[in-house]
Length: 174
Image (cartoon, one colour):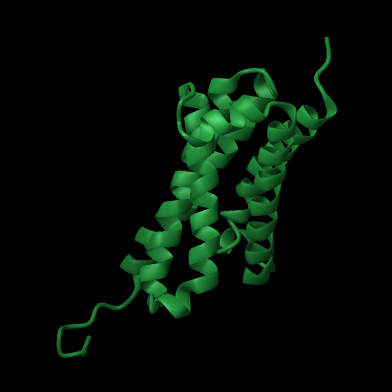
């Protein structure tokens, strides 16, 4: 027995969003040289749009399930999906309003990286616990790729880069 087209559209949008996250989190690192930060931003907006399509598709298929998910009166896999979606929304909002909020670039970068880890962690948990859309090795490979890419990018941006910068004393001298 097949699924409704709106459910399939929603599920595929979620799969594509998670797939794009693998590339998107690696763009601010030297491992994808030749690609610029504008593509990172564009993919971020694309992921946000796909998450919205995912939610709308599932809402059109089963409005009650989505309403229940928004109040977190659902199983863990749905709560993880909601947390991931809210983390995406918060990440985009912070990226668009960083200057207006008065966040320094380094403070924003730490928040953005923490949200990226939250987004991918909750999305991977959501995907693995659902067990159905991508059942099998494809699901596990996608989730593993997302987790490894995010971990590597976060370690690079938040640990390796700061450790490689020259240290300055409180007087401003190295």
